[in-house]
Length: 221
Image 1 (cartoon, rainbow, N blue to C red):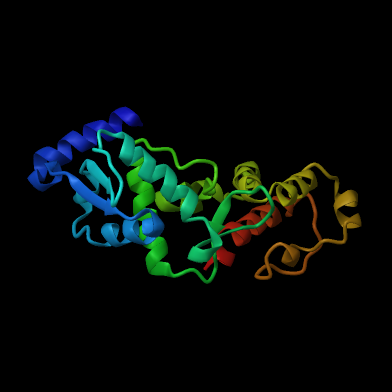
Image 2: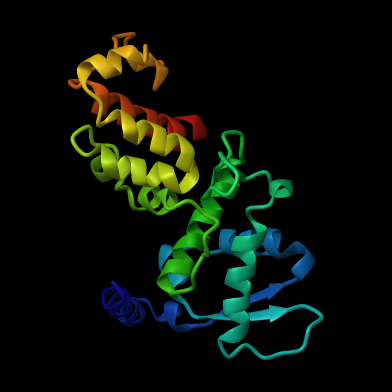
C-alpha cells in the first residue's frame, strides 16, 4: 500500500504542478481542531491533499522538518474525539470512537478528508477512531463489512467499538436451533427493519450482521 501511495503521489505531482507546492498550516493549539478543518475546507481541488505540509504552531518556536507535522496529526486525533467538539462518541468504555448521530455532517466530511491526509502521509491516528471509519471512507463497508455470509468480519469491526456486545453476538453463532430459541431473541431485536422471526441457525448470521450494520452505520445517520 505504501509503495502504491508513493507512486500515486509522484504521478499526481507530474500531472498537477500545483500539487508540488507546500501546504502551509498555521495552527493555534487552543483552536487546533477548528484551524485544521478550516484549512481542509480551503482545498479547492482533490489533488491538493497530496501536497507536503509545513506546520506552524502560532506563538511557538520551531521550523517544521517533519516533527511539527507529526505533532499536528497526533494532536488532532486526540483532540477531535473530545465531547466538546460534538463529532464523536464512545459506545462503551474503552471502545473506539464513532461519529455521533447528531454530528455536523459538513464538519465530519472535513474530518474524513483529514483522515485521508493522515493515511496518505503515514501519520498514525492512534487507537481512538474506530477502524470502521476507514471501511466507510473507502466505500468497502457494504461490499466487505456487512455480508451475511461472513458475520465474523462485521463482528471484528463492532468489537473495536463495543467489545461486550460483539462478544455476546459472536456467541450466538455457535448455538443450536434449540439454544437460539431459548434466548427468546427475534430478528427485529438486532434491527427493527427485520421481521420478528425467532432466531435460528438459518437466520442468526443475518441478524448479527444487521445488528452490526445498525450499530456502526445506520444509528450514526
